[in-house]
Structure formats: structure tokens, C-alpha cells
Image (tube, rainbow, N blue to C red):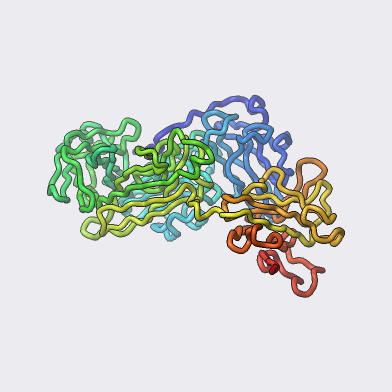
Length: 568
């Protein structure tokens, strides 16, 4: 019996690769050139784009471009691999429903890091739960080369959740947006399949159906909707018989199911509309009898209950600074890793600013599931917001956190967009004198680039060694640039130095490693109260030990001498 866990199948348009103006792999191994025909992707017979290259033994960084120019249709964030020894590496790419247009449904991984099944299944098999880097237990394989990646095992009886993870990191959120639940009887093997061409996941097992969970489905008015998540697809007539469901607990004692409806796109899920809404701050039990799977196998009587504590969270976000800079958003959705939140950009709860005070609000009910007979435990929820279904707070790893308290009926969370409140912005003009020792010869100039204007990641500000632009001494091989960050700038700056060649290209110092960080000091660094800017002494290419710089910095790296400020 099969359970199709994806909620949406993405139609892969099988068009010739040549018509896509060069969808390509670009990386530091080919000078980040999207127009290089040697790295064009080719559509194979399975509907997946591929490219095999010969890689050296060092660290490689790459991403995918959907056209042959840098036009914003690149994905995902930089990925990396280190072969260890020279060898062939194959990239597998899904260009999404509309190749040539970035829509957030594109995926890539390379052959050194096959997909893994990441979730509570890992711990059951001796690994580490939800560890995207744990390849000890659940690595998938594609032995017949059909681009359907599989993992199969007999798993200890119980209920589990997972997601398919690519490249051993969470940079890409494979479909469906939420976690995929399933059950195991401890006897029959469970096979999990990931179809790369359509980005869908399938769970295959011969075990009897079981109840995995019964989350609340808040409709915006009252907590009167539940859905029962079964371990596999269930038969419609038995699933839609209201008498097969008994809900007890809370102040009402017991609750009548007015209607039961099997989900139209996921036959393992049944929606229950209760005659009376549930109340937050109480425990509830859902018991199911009489339901069968598609083959007529009755529900496992030892796994037919779900227990949960109902908790309400009022989620608020202050958008004043965002609105001042960008205008009022058309929509603002909240996304997260715990039901009812998902990472589907427009599938999450929409928030509203009812009183036009720049604070957007939404109420969510969370069901904190636990083993019946035990007690609910605190649950950590990660969440973030997305404007107009397109603009996320920071990158995918950025997020707010709330700990659900099983001893409280409700709580309120109030945050600022990207966690940036007015206190996080400088209250005066802050000057910084960037100085670089040990710089290479740069035909097109040495630049500092960063996250806050007047720095940016396209050009930046040039450092000179000619006694101008803040440079102290001409010809001393210390390249300098004085940069003034205006009042209101976000005080947590990220930056790097860039050695440009004769054109628009060049190299970053320690290209594959994180950016440098600097907190702009609006107490001691204000230009209005200093004789000059704060002075920052850096070494080019901080990931490598340096020599010839004097005894006090001999064999030091940037991590040991960064942020040296000279007193005024």
C-alpha cells in the first residue's frame, strides 16, 4: 500500500536544454561564469537535468543558474563539496515547474551527498534525529539510475516524521513544505522514495494503518476543526463515518463529530468538524475505530489513539521599520516548522494590521502531542515571516523561536521584522577606517564590500595606498578606505575584501568561508565626538597564516587579530 506524502505534484516541462538559454552549474571551479557552455546542464530521459565534471581534491563551491546570465534566477545558496581525491562528480537538478524562471521549486544535489531521510527515523535506526549531516543510517540510493531515490528498512514500531534533505543541509526545502508522517509496525519494512523529477515523496508499507496525530485545524474563528493523520491511505467510506471518531477531554468532557471528510489530495488525512470548539489549556484524546486502509485492513487497535495539549499563541510582528523603507506590504504570512505552520511561502497563516499601527497579528493553535498516559512536554517552534509571498526575513536559516509551555493555556510573542528594532540601528554617523595589510596586487583595485550602505556586494568602496580617501601614508603597502555609515544604519555589519581584476570579476579573500563581522559603535564611534574614524586593522585572506608582518602578528590569522581599534 502506498502513501503519497507530497501535497502538490510539480509538472516538469520536458523542453530541450538548448531552449533554456544555458541552465548551468557555476562555481569557483569555472570562475563563476554562467555563460560557459562546458557547464551547461542536459535533460536526461527521466526528466532531471544533469552534468558530470572532473573535480579536484579541494573545496568546491557552486550553485545553479536557470539562464546563461546572472539575472536572479540562480539557486540555491552556495553549495559545497570536497572530493578528498580527484574524481567525477555528478550534479542532479530539478528546474521546477517553469524552467527558466526562479519560483522556489528548484532543487539540486551532487553525487557525493545523495539525498537522506532526515527526521525521527534516524534515531530509531541508531543515528541522530533531524541531523542533516548524519549519513550513518538513512542515505538514499538510486541503483537503477531512474532518478527515484530510495531507502528501505524495518523500523521499530511507532510513529515517525521526516523530510528529504539534499546536500546534507537545510538550504533547500523539498516538497511537501511540512514534515511527512508515517507509522511502522516493527515487522514490515518501510520504503521511502524520492522522485527527483517531480519533487514528490512516497512511503510504501504493508503495515496496518495507525493513528499518528490529530492536529488542530484553526479556521480563524474557533478551534473546532481537527484532522486525523493516519500512517497510510485510508478507505473513504469508513474514514468518513463520524461515529468512528471519539474525542474526549477538556471542559466539555466529550465532543461530537459533525462531519468527517477524507482529504481530497492526501488520502491518509481525514478532517473532522466538531459541533463544539475545543478550549486551549486542556488535554484531549482522539480514538479511532472501524477505519480501514484501501485494502480493507482494519486500523491497528494498539495504535488508534492520539493525545495532545491545546495551546494558543498570539503572534505579533512590528513592521514599522520595514514599512518606512519599503512601503506597506500587500500580504504578510508566517511560516514555521510546527503544524499548523509550514515553510510553504503562501501556504502559512496570513497576518493582518487591523488597527494600522504597523503591528501585524495572527492567532495560531498548536497541538502538543504526547504519548497517551504521559504528560505534554515543552516544544520549541521556529518561525519567520515572508512579505508578498516573495521576500523572506533573512536567509532560510534565519528565524524567531517560541517555546510552547504545556503549563500555560496561551502566550503572546512580539518581535520585529528580522529581529531589528530601532535599538539595533546606529543613532549617529559612524566612521570606520578600513586598513588592509598583506594585500595581493589587484589589477582592478582592492575593495571592501558588505551588507550596509555605502558598502554593497556589487562594487563596494575601493581601498587606496596613495594618501587619499583616508589612507594615512602613501606607498606603505597598507591599503585604506574611510567609510561613513549614516545614522539609522543597521549596526551589525558583514563585510569582506575583494581583489578585482581588469574587468568586473575578481576574487574574494577566503571565498568559501563566512564574512567578517563588525558592530558599528554608536557610543564611542560617532564622528561628531571623535577626532577621526574608528580604525580597523585587517589582514588580507584571513584564513591563511601570514608571514613578514612583524613579531606581534607573525603566523596569526584574521580570527586572532580582527577589530583592533586605536585610541584617539
